[in-house]
Image (cartoon, rainbow, N blue to C red; front, side, top):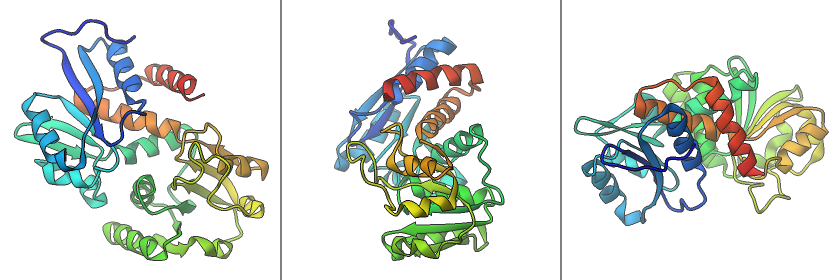
Length: 290
């Protein structure tokens, strides 16, 4: 399904970040281009921190159709954009740049990607009580998603209580309701005893550090009915394993990765990707992730 012929009409998309060498995004986008018959190629670009503005300006000058943005540039790139989607502006982070007249417009497809991934597993956010672990990166997107989709209550647990308070204040202010309650991670025993939906948004347990989890106490996991770990490598994190051992359901973040990429591709090419294509790419990602 990958492209073999490149010519004068081939459009270019890519990923900017540092590092980018580990990315699986080319698999998503180049497979989509092949399935849809688009004359398009997607490649990663390693960008040094002091060259970010040059990279975005140069990409526009080179007629690059669109870009994804990964760490550490999701916030810094805002200063290089002609426009920013209102939700991405609220979050203060962008991961997708779409070419427009006069410059790139920034979007955050982490939000829609996480939502579509959770919906695909039958997980509902509206009206839910949620324990959210972490206050940066992907956890930040999850916090804003919970606010936007009207979660009943979100207990935001983080090692730094000040960072949790700051994010909770941002989300509560953005959606004009007190939906997020900040907590120190060490105070997890103060969570309600009734079963909660959990979103694990820290890097604890990410390969190769697979024998750690954000909370080591196995008794805690009896409080979780369903868990979504934003990590996808390893395929089953220790957090997920603890939840399953306690009788709950648990999912990894591979579908979030997939759906945020799908959303970006749809924005760049003004198409809607079919569910059959999504399933095909998910199968390929699972094979690569094993």
